[in-house]
Length: 264
Image 1 (cartoon, rainbow, N blue to C red):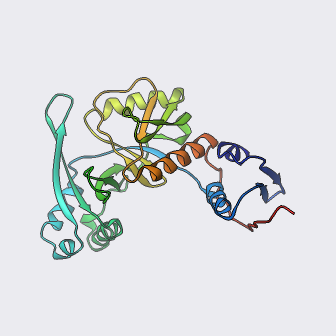
Image 2: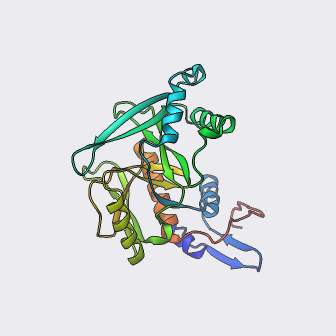
């Protein structure tokens, strides 16, 4: 908790250990800052690099259903094929579902899994949702990714994290420098994934899913903070860095009480 307070730059904050309780005092907070502090301190950030499985039989079966299902059409869910060039120049094909309404897309996929065992993902896989935009509109489209459930790299492999800017100096990104084990894992993962996507998942949400074009041996990875307005991406990047730098909390926090006083 002390490390998290320091990483979040709460000046003058104190932590008192009372056995089963921690008492945190942070001076000088207005009501909005007080609420942000409560949310930040309780948050358990998870980070995972998950390998994707393109052109899976599971997604193919879902896509076939979506193309003929009136309910999918009513919900604005569509099925698409896409491809990109692999390391040998040959195309890598993938299939996906997409929609602008993420809750509707989630619920539709869950309903099909509940109704038909043949439309359930494998036990070691799960469906992620990648935010996408055409670059001309703030409206997001959500596209499915079929992912390995077990992350190949997680927050425990991060030695340092910081907010940087993209090469054009516009959008914030999070630069991760991995420790020795993480560097080995990243090299192995990117060698295996060459030509495929790796989904970077933060707190259960896909923030980016770059195509790997070559193995990465230097132990450094950069996370693009998804789609959305610049201010929101900046806040998300700073929050991710602060929580990664502070480390994951060993257990969930249960708030016993929270009081905003005038300091008197």
